[in-house]
Structures are given as C-alpha cells and as structure tokens.
Image (cartoon, rainbow, N blue to C red):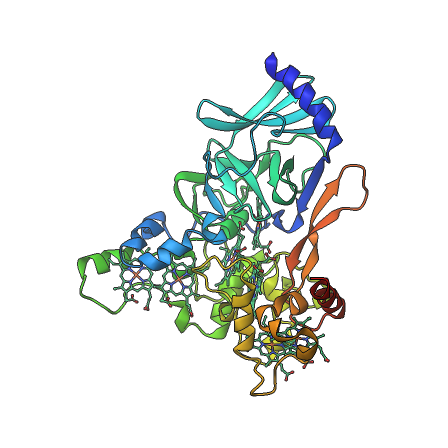
Length: 413
Ligand code: HEC
Ligand code: HEC
Ligand code: HEC
Ligand code: HEC
Ligand code: HEC
Ligand code: HEC
Ligand code: HEC
C-alpha cells in the first residue's frame, strides 16, 4: 500500500517537529444532569435563515457573513476545512505505531485511524466547529447522533492535533451535546423525547448553522413573511430589536455564550434574546471572584469586575458591533475608549506623556493585554508544562508589566 510507505516517511518528519495536544477545557461540556425532553421552544419552521435577510438588509448581511459568529459552525466542505490534507501534513501520530490521517476520498473528507499501517476505523467530516481563529474541530453523524472526530486543527501551530480533552489515544465516540451546539450554532432540533436519556439525537435537516441573525433577533419567519407581503410597511413587525434592551437584557444575550460555564435548568436552545438568563440557567454557578475567572470564554465575568463597567452604563455592544468583523482593529476599539475618556473631562490616560501622540491608536495593549488562558493549552511533546494560548483580558485596568513592554517595544522601533 502506497500510503503506508508514504506515511512512514512523514512520521520521520513529524517526530522531528512537535506533536501536540491542546485543550479547550471550557469547551468540554459538562453535560447537564437535568437534560430534559424535546421542547425546543422555537420550532425549525419559525426560522427564516439569514440568506433571505439580504433582500432587505443587504449591508448588514454582507458584513455579518464575514464574522467569527457566522463562521463558527458550517456543513464541512473543501473550502471551510482549515487543516491541510497535503502529503506529509495530514497525519497525527499518537505513538510510532498508531496514527490518524485526514484524507479526501471522492468528494468527501475523512479521518481514518491506522494501527501498524492497517486502517482500523474511519468517519467522515460532516460539520466544522470554530471559525479557525484559534482552532477548528470536526463532527460526524452516526444516524441521528453527533460525535467529535479525533483530530482538531490548531491554528497557531498550523497542525492537526489530538482533539481537546481527549487522552492520548484515538477516540471516535465522544458525543456532542446540545449545550455545545447552543454556543456554536443558532438552532439544532432535538428528536429524542425520552426524558431520562442522556443520548441526544438531532434532526439532520432542521439546523441553523453559525451564530446567525436569528440567535440575537429571534426566529424571523413571521417578520420576513409580513414585510414581503407589506413592502410599504416601514415599522418592523415580529422581530426582536436589541437596541431597545435594558442593560441587563443586552448583557445576558452575550453572557449566554461568553459567561463561562453555566449549569442549565431548562433544555438547550430554549433561551431567546431579551429573556432572563436566570430562567434557563442556575446563576449561582457564575464565578464572581476575578482571580478565579479565566480569560478564555468569560469576557462577561472579567468585564463586570472592571471599574469602567461598574462606573458607567457600558455593555458589550459599547465596543462590539455584532454585524462586523472587527478583529484586530485597535484604532477603532481605542476610539470607543475615548468616547468616555477625554482630556476635556480630565479622564484621559495618565500615562499620555510617556506614550506620546500615538497613544490614540492603541489603548488596548496596555489596558486589555493578551493573557495566557488557563484553559486553552497546548501540550508540546517532551514537555510537562502545557503552553497556553492567549486571550484578550476584559478586566480593564492598569497593567504595569505590559506598559513596560509596550514602551520598550516603542523605543526599539
Ligand atoms: C421583505 C423585507 C424584509 C426582510 C426579508 C427582512 N426584513 Fe427585517 N426589516 C424590514 C423592515 C421594513 C424593517 C423596518 C425598517 C428598518 O428598520 O429597516 C425591518 C427591521 C428589522 C430589524 C430592526 C427592528 C426594529 O425594531 O426596527 C431587525 C432586527 C430585522 N429587521 C431583522 C431581520 C432579519 C434577522 C431578517 C432575516 C431573517 C430580516 N429582518 C428580513 C424588512 C425585512
Ligand atoms: C450563541 C452563542 C453566542 C452568543 C449569543 C454571542 N456569541 Fe460571541 N461568540 C460565540 C462564539 C462560539 C464565538 C467564537 C467564534 C469562533 O471563532 O469560532 C464568539 C466570538 C465572539 C467575538 C470574537 C470575534 C472575533 O473576531 O474573533 C466577539 C467580539 C463576540 N463573540 C462578541 C459577542 C457579543 C458582543 C455578543 C452579544 C451581543 C455575543 N458575542 C453573543 C458565541 C456567541
Ligand atoms: C451576536 C448578535 C447579533 C447577530 C448575530 C446579528 N445581530 Fe443585528 N443587532 C444586534 C444588536 C445587539 C443590535 C442593536 C445594536 C445597537 O444597540 O447598537 C442589532 C441591531 C440590528 C438591526 C437594527 C438596525 C441597526 O443597525 O441598529 C437590524 C436591522 C439587524 N440588527 C439585523 C441583523 C441581521 C439581518 C443579521 C444577520 C445578517 C443580524 N442582525 C445579526 C445583534 C446581532
Ligand atoms: C458556553 C458556551 C460554549 C460552549 C458550551 C462551547 N463553546 Fe466553544 N467557544 C465558545 C466561545 C465564546 C469561544 C470563543 C471565544 C473564547 O474562547 O472566549 C469558543 C471557541 C471554540 C473553538 C475555537 C474557535 C476559534 O477558531 O477560535 C472551538 C474549536 C470550539 N469552541 C469548540 C467547541 C466544542 C466542540 C464544544 C462542545 C464540545 C464547545 N466549543 C462548547 C463558547 C462555547
Ligand atoms: C462607557 C464609558 C467608558 C468606556 C467606553 C471605557 N471606560 Fe474606562 N472607565 C470609565 C469610568 C466611568 C471609569 C471610572 C473612572 C473613575 O475612576 O473615576 C473608568 C476607569 C478606567 C480605568 C481605571 C481602572 C482602574 O482600575 O483604576 C482605566 C485604565 C480605563 N478606564 C481604561 C479604559 C480603556 C482602555 C477603555 C477602552 C478599551 C475604556 N476604559 C473604555 C468609563 C469608560
Ligand atoms: C471597553 C471595550 C470593550 C467592551 C465593553 C467589551 N469588549 Fe470584547 N474586546 C474588546 C477589545 C479591544 C478586544 C480585542 C479585539 C482584537 O484585538 O481583535 C475584544 C475582544 C473580544 C473577544 C475576542 C477575544 C480574543 O481574545 O480573541 C470576545 C469573544 C469579546 N471581546 C467578547 C466580549 C463580550 C461578550 C463583551 C461583554 C461582556 C465584551 N467583549 C465587551 C473591547 C471590549
Ligand atoms: C503604554 C501603555 C499605555 C497606553 C498605550 C495607554 N495607557 Fe492608560 N494608563 C497607563 C498607565 C501605566 C496608567 C497609570 C498611570 C498613572 O497612574 O500614573 C494609565 C492610566 C490610565 C487611566 C487612569 C486610571 C486611573 O488610575 O485613574 C485611564 C482612564 C487610561 N489610562 C485610559 C487610557 C486610554 C483611553 C488609552 C488610549 C487612548 C490609554 N489609556 C493608553 C498605560 C497606558
């Protein structure tokens, strides 16, 4: 078998490089004990899908499809699978005798396990999860159940790695729960109605991929039907507009997925924008002590501990436009800071003189620095201590070390 010979060769190459595993501990779903029956409040028919929004909201639609939200789950295809399937790059070795390789067979993609060069098991890549900013993981269907595939793509290393939270052996049977999908999609309809069953089954045709328009605006089939029938109506009907939300409503919409671990008290996909999160989750699990909060996945917990948050009416939307991909746009984010911190009202940066005029381009690296995540870690081969990925801290404060580094980097320019 040609592939076997080839893969021996690539093993030599791969062992030379780093073999790594990484963990999205937060993303290991603590499957709630209280999983209950199928009463997804929003039936699939109530969703219109975002394509049709473009008819009347073209500008928003065109930028929204470029966001990490929209891209965070998709039906897998050649274009959206991030990792390489090129010879020498598509294999991950668990030990010298066991590896998994990612392959294209006919028009579909697969992950296949080999032991001593013999194929043992394989499964298709059906769904991608993750925009690929930090990584992307893959799911496959087995009848109506979803499972995670053994290999995940880790963007920082541009490599296939052992999937997050998997021990160092090949696993094809890790079930995907509705809470995982609730954070990474708009809607998956459950079909099993057995209250006591921990096995979750989904209707393969009743899915709204991505964190799409209707996650934040509610199912919109009635809105679309009304406005298509009444083209002269200018007042919106049958739609949720978050710009009318109270501060708490606005924050809780984002907290649903950016508030760290929450233990659910109702089935996933029941919560709708504008509702009270505490009706769906037991909020006493929300971490309040800042030193215990991880930068990963809990922007809410970090932000609310900040003085900026406590002493203003700020929400996530103060700095983030949900319809645009603004990744890395430090100038734009700094303008949001300066909408409150001005020289005129004497609330501007006290370090201004040290930084000079360029300060207006970057408030972020000193006051919201990238920090090591305690839960996204990469275990490099031959090391005992995992290497962390970094995340933006949403605890807005004065960070003396980062300031020193920033000023030094500026001097050496
Ligand atoms: C046939 C035209 C049409 C389609 C299709 C359509 N809308 Fe609208 N939408 C309107 C009109 C008209 C308004 C009111 C004027 C405005 O705000 O633009 C509106 C307003 C809105 C608003 C603001 C609500 C408010 O109170 O002002 C939101 C949010 C919205 N639409 C979301 C959506 C989403 C999501 C979709 C796709 C699922 C969609 N719309 C599809 C016509 C449409
Ligand atoms: C249904 C869950 C969900 C909701 C609700 C949600 N997000 Fe997210 N958000 C995610 C996920 C998942 C990602 C990571 C996407 C990826 O990279 O795959 C993300 C990523 C982001 C990012 C990073 C974007 C980038 O370019 O890297 C920002 C900023 C963000 N969300 C802000 C918000 C704000 C503000 C709200 C509330 C208005 C919100 N999110 C509501 C799930 C959600
Ligand atoms: C992550 C949540 C999120 C997603 C996804 C999202 N929106 Fe919004 N949308 C908001 C928020 C929050 C506001 C209110 C903004 C504000 O208060 O400034 C808003 C406001 C609007 C408005 C009112 C007009 C405006 O610009 O203020 C329209 C129309 C709209 N959205 C349409 C859409 C459409 C169409 C999509 C998908 C193509 C979409 N939204 C996706 C959160 C979202
Ligand atoms: C409570 C909500 C939540 C749950 C549950 C959750 N995630 Fe996430 N996930 C996020 C958010 C938010 C991000 C990105 C922002 C961050 O890490 O803070 C993310 C990031 C990711 C990324 C990296 C995306 C990128 O390109 O940067 C992957 C891959 C991922 N999650 C997979 C999963 C899988 C698989 C599950 C279920 C087994 C899961 N997540 C469960 C909210 C969640
Ligand atoms: C909605 C208004 C608002 C926005 C936007 C805002 N802040 Fe603040 N910020 C405040 C207020 C109010 C305080 C408290 C001022 C005081 O101490 O009297 C504060 C305090 C601070 C402090 C002092 C923190 C401490 O612990 O002493 C820093 C540093 C700061 N802000 C930086 C920023 C940066 C950087 C941004 C942008 C990423 C930003 N702020 C965005 C309102 C805001
Ligand atoms: C004072 C401004 C401000 C507020 C308020 C704010 N953010 Fe951010 N956020 C930022 C900045 C700046 C970044 C870094 C953007 C970049 O470099 O791409 C960021 C990045 C993010 C990211 C990507 C994280 C990463 O490390 O890649 C997520 C997710 C996010 N914000 C979610 C939220 C949520 C949810 C809220 C509300 C609880 C919120 N943000 C409130 C300024 C803010
Ligand atoms: C080189 C790093 C650096 C940059 C860039 C920077 N800051 Fe600061 N900032 C500091 C330091 C250090 C302090 C504390 C100075 C002191 O107390 O003497 C500070 C203080 C502040 C304070 C007052 C905090 C207090 O104790 O009352 C605010 C508000 C603030 N900065 C906002 C901003 C804003 C807005 C920007 C962007 C326009 C910005 N900073 C850019 C390092 C920086």
